[in-house]
View 1 (tube, rainbow, N blue to C red):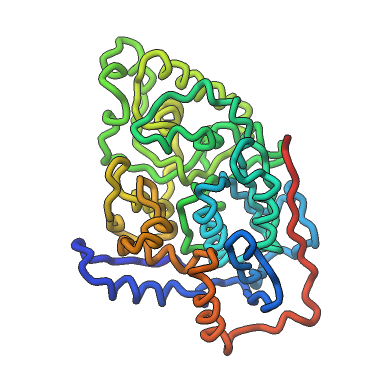
View 2: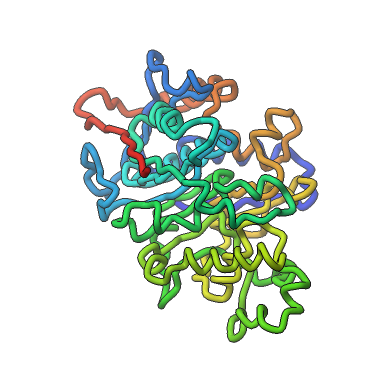
Length: 393
């Protein structure tokens, strides 16, 4: 299955273009096999969510055991944070990954939950299992006091959430046998097979891979205090750093642990606390450590900025070229704008993945109608798939 090539008029005048793309975007695009939950299941309705369709492996996938270990070498590992504020976005992101995966039963999700989130990790675990009964996943508890004393104020309060910094600690939090992971923010949807991103090779000693944007003004990510210092800018000496967005990264956790990159990022956060060398939350320390040493990945894998700017929020159009992943980074989130009846045109591309009950009930009926000729009877001889979760405490 190929990714989509979206072409939008720069003025974003016509909503008909969006509606047409939504049709293209619809359920029959997945290579994997899907069946819909029966009417009797409660799913995640007690939480306001409906149960997702069940996604099965397509042709050519490894044989799925009833209970895959997180150490299984055939898995694609995805790490995401999960919390009450962005829960709706996280569930839509998971749904999009499964819908477009060629081997959805071999995608393993590692969810990082904050220790003091209003929805406890146990509640979040029960919620995920109720929405995705067959999902292979674990929920880990992130100790906020690990990072709370390193966080400095940012241009937007949401960027100061300790959970934003959980990606710095994946090498410590995830099982030691997990040596490679795709990190995804909660405000993304995939419209392509995640296995393609997983197969990206990190060359040489590179620890992370991400789409780079070398046309961006790299200097603006740091303050005048940084650039005027006689020592600090030397970190980029002999490097050609480019901006990259940390919301989508392929990470070699083996090299991460060996190189103690957690400590390197923390050391720059300590400098920030004393000197105020940047304004943007958790991103600049990654730029300081990895800028110029990133494996460049095709831009289709992070069409970012769809949430608008970080202060006002505004509607954005897509970057030129093909699209495999849409990312609503920035102030505006699609579920908020849709609920407030003031969506941006591109928010309609996020909506088909939304599993929140008020929006999804009618949509499931529509999917059922379109799939009558394509459904496969899985009632006989289907394997007993078991979703499960553990805790890292």
